[in-house]
Structures are given as C-alpha cells and as structure tokens.
Length: 481
Ligand code: B12
Image 1 (cartoon, rainbow, N blue to C red):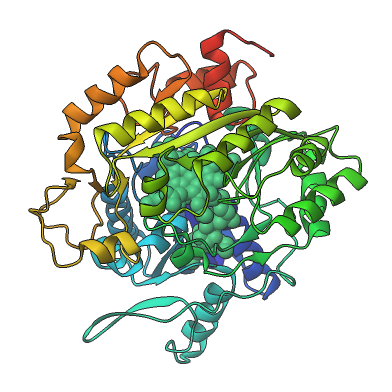
Image 2 (tube, helix red, strand yellow):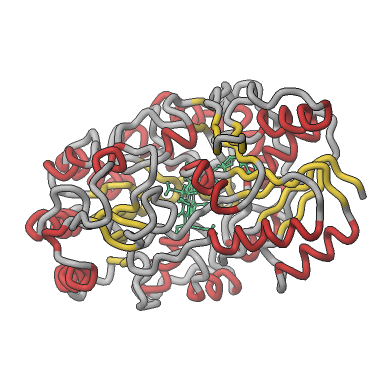
C-alpha cells in the first residue's frame, strides 16, 4: 500500500503502554484526507525484521516516529533510548526515501538536540496533529516550511525551530480508538489511557512540560473525555491511567470532567488513576473523583521540607500536603507520594525531614527518585548554564553533554556522590516496605516501569491498574485477580 504517512511506534518497553499520541496524529491526518499506515513495533519480536518486512510491502510519503521517552529518567540506571532511535532512523534510510519527522513527549523536551543526534529530517515540538498535516501539505506542494508551528528543521546554518501555537482542544478530533490494538495493550499493559487536557502553568524549575505541552491549560471538553471513556469501556478497557501531568489543575475542569462521568453512570464501571499536585485538593474533590471511578492517586510531593519545595518552584507547603493526605485516608482513596531528592539546596537533614514527613502522611506507598534529571529549556538548566561539567552537583553524563541529551542529573553535593547518597536514603528508609526506589538494581524495590518483569508477570495473570499500585499489592500480598 502507498501511504502518505506512515507512523511508527518504536517503544518496546514492557509493560506495554499504548502510544496514545499516535492515535491523535493518525486521526488528524486521516481527517485531513491523507492515507495513513501505522507500524507498531511494541510487540515485535525483532524490531529490525518487522520494519524491513513492513517497508517491503508498503511505501510512505513521510515517516513519523513517536519518541515518547528519551531515557528512563533515573540516576541509578540511566537507560537512554536515543541510540536505538538513531539506529532506527539509519535503518529506515535503507528502506525508504521518505523524509523522517520525529515527535512525542520525550522528543519535545529536547527537540533540536535530538534532531541533530538522530539524523532525522524534521521534528515537531508539542502537539503533532496540526504540524504533521501542514508538513505533508508543504512537502507535497513544495510549499514553505517556515510557517509551520512547532516544526524543527535543518537549514544551511544549522537547525531552526518554529514556536508551537498551542491550539485549543475544543475542536480536536474525536478519537475512534481504532489505530492501535488497545485490547492487547490492556491485556499486556494492564491499563488504558485517556487525556483530559494539555499544558501546565506551573513554575517547577526542573519540569519540561511547559516547554513540551505549553504554558497554558488547554482543556478537552468533558463530554469528549466521557465519550472516549465509553469507547474504551466498549472495548472492555475498564482500568485507566489518566495522561494529565497534574489532573487537579485547573480545579474547575476536574470537577466538570468528574461530573460528566458521574452523570453518565460510568463511575461504577471504570477504575482510574491519576497524577495530582498536592494542592489544590479538598474533601469535596476527593469524593467527586471517587464517585467518578478514581481508585488511586500519585501525588508529586517532591519534598517535605518547606525550603526545598520553594527551591524547586513548588507552590504548596508541607502542611497543605499533609492535609491532602489526611483527606485521601478519610475518603478512602489509595495514594502514593512521589519524592524527588537531591535538588538545589538539599542536605542530609532536608532529605531526612522529607522521608519522615512522607511516612507521617501515611500513604499506601512512597516513590523515591534520587537526583533531578536536567532538561534543556527549564529554569534548572538556566541556573546551570555556563558552569561546565565540573559543577560538583552534576552526575551522570557530564562530559560532552552540554545539551543534556544524555542522562544527566542534579544531585546536591551535600548528599555525597551517588553511591553515598543512595546508601544514606536506604538507611533512612530502613525496613519500611512502603518505599520504592526508582532505577535501583534491586528488582523488588525498583519502580522503573521499563521492562519490569514483576509487573509484566502480574499483568499476565490479571493484575490491572497503575503500576505503583500493582507493585504495592504484590508487596503486601493483596491479590484481587
Ligand atoms: C501518563 C504518563 C505515564 C503513564 C502512562 C499511562 C498510560 N497508560 O498511558 C505511566 C505512569 C505508565 C508512565 C510511565 C513512564 N513514563 Co511517563 N508520562 C506520562 C505523561 C504524564 C503523559 C503521556 C501521555 O500519554 N500523554 C498524552 C499523549 C496524547 O500525548 P503525547 O504522547 O505527548 O502525544 C502528543 C505529542 O507528543 C505529539 N506526538 C506524539 N507522537 C508523535 C509522533 C510524531 C511523528 C509527531 C510529529 C508528533 C507526535 O502529538 C501527540 C498529540 O498532540 C508524560 C508527561 C507529559 N505531559 O507528556 C510522562 C512522560 C512521557 N513519561 C516519562 C517517563 C520517563 C516515563 C517512564 C520511562 C518512567 C519510568 N522510568 O518508569 C515510563 C515509560 C513507560 C513506557 N512504557 O514507555 C517522561 C519522558 C521524559 C523524557 N525525557 O523522555 C515524561 C515526559 C514525564 C517527564 N516530564 O519526565 N508515564
């Protein structure tokens, strides 16, 4: 078949997470009148062979590759996916003459840098729907590329990037959920996915979301969200993880989405999890979310130390977070606290305060990420600009990596180097079984979701839900399947 556009999902991490972004891009291109093929390599036994076989039978006018993750973002393991991406781009050059465009959540975090290193022709920062359609039109008609929002391209002088326009999602395409094998993703990945908005107006110094999703909240109409939930339920997908970075912002939208789900009686049929900021939160919101089917929340707490929270650009206090935790326990929602230890100003004392604070909140589990992944286009990167690789707070790939493409982390020198800091935290955690340590070599305490055999096996025998909750249940022996 001759396609105008062939989209590729190269993400083979297991448990399998459906590349929802590709559904949006494929559907937008189809609705604009283009023919679209989709090569999903997630379940391929041999990625190279599957790609060769696909391009022996099909041709493309443009190839789009989704780059969901650049790396696993854990200091203790530092697994980068970019060498495999470069290999794929290289292999495609032998199989097709079509130009290659990259996009996706990971790509958008460092677009110029990844384009340069991967050898692809184009990239798109942020939403793929509009720019991919515009790119195909321009490539087919020989029209200008310079006006395409979010497009990253090569010119004689290097690489240039246009500003994304961050379109409103009011008129976004309705997703038929027909581009991917969602039932298989559910069987092997244990959860469906659903987005209620894009963008973040937060000021966190380490987060690339405002750069990759826009600084303004763009809301999907609640009826569109609920329609899509119904569509997933029709396919038997009744455990979901929402794709919002912080579901409770802005609060009015959460309430409207939950109200629509409840109105349609979906709350009793579906179980969903979400990431939330510790604030804003209230007993009213918790009850509404629970009635709409929420069974678990992962709060990005980061720290229990007021000064460290300020240093990280967070806008809540430990006391507000404590109250949020109390409400969750009162309402009966399972919850996790995610900690980010080692940022600017972190000391042994503030780390100890954080561990103790998290324990006092009595969550169902606690995740620790040691070291803060440094992304370009963030305040943290600006703070470090010009300081060079000898900065004592840098860990990971510090040499030849001024653009931060290889995994590089801020780890406050006050904690010592990686092994020392990790040993110190392990000691603080002691025998408290609620803790998970991201990227740790110990399979039992790790909660890296890439190629996590514990999760894969549990899902194969019927476990469903957020991965942290499946791991937690495994640990406490709470089996519900
Ligand atoms: C929800 C979420 C999760 C959930 C997923 C639940 C589920 N069932 O889907 C869970 C908890 C499982 C998870 C796991 C992980 N995640 Co996560 N996750 C997210 C989050 C919040 C949303 C992703 C999402 O689905 N968005 C909705 C879809 C519709 O948007 P999208 O994929 O971005 O697609 C749009 C554009 O990017 C673009 N696009 C996409 N593909 C393409 C292709 C082309 C050709 C083009 C042009 C455009 C394009 O168009 C799409 C529509 O506009 C993002 C942060 C964020 N705000 O994006 C992090 C994020 C993607 N995750 C991240 C990471 C690191 C991980 C893990 C590796 C963590 C770990 N070590 O375990 C794992 C990887 C799991 C896997 N199998 O890949 C990082 C990646 C950062 C990086 N440097 O690469 C992010 C960006 C968070 C962050 N800021 O650190 N994650």
